[in-house]
Image (cartoon, rainbow, N blue to C red; front, side):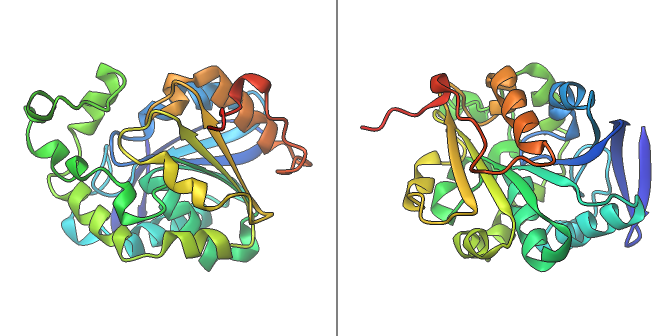
Length: 261
């Protein structure tokens, strides 16, 4: 277990491997741990990092830190303190919003982002998520359980009581579609076609109109494509993380193609 102090708050992280750096940012359900298999796969050729946002995992759980400004500052401080140069940012849900907001503010040090299950509008976030960690009966009451494994469920239950609701409210104050369209780096959007936490259909509004954005849908995957379709996700990330790779050269495997209806 590794930790550093950023803005007087403890931040837990893990890092291993050697090569071009990749920083993984988790979402509302879980912690750094659900990135482990992906990190192990990419660590063959990359130095991989994953941190716990404030309010999650083993990081500081002070309520004053549960907003986007604090999370952007956390990521900026993390990259600076550890001397990480030109990382690929891989964010999931909450982590995807932080990665993009950071890239808009620090455009000179960001050139590639993988945004997984990015909520493009407040309406795309399932309202049941607001009360997810307030009751262990939620899944039974709503017949809704987006957690893919017991290990992820355990980590999700460790989140601070108010962190999901507070951070979602903070995300709602941002125009994520505008931020996505205005960042100066390449952005690969990845969605599970069956995501029941963040509506993947919202990305259809992009319709290939921005050259720096590409969207890929993974069939049969839900909110955690890095787990539900791990081998495909890892291969996609590995291809995109190559030094000379671009959105144009990224090969979209035939079995990943989303059937257009």
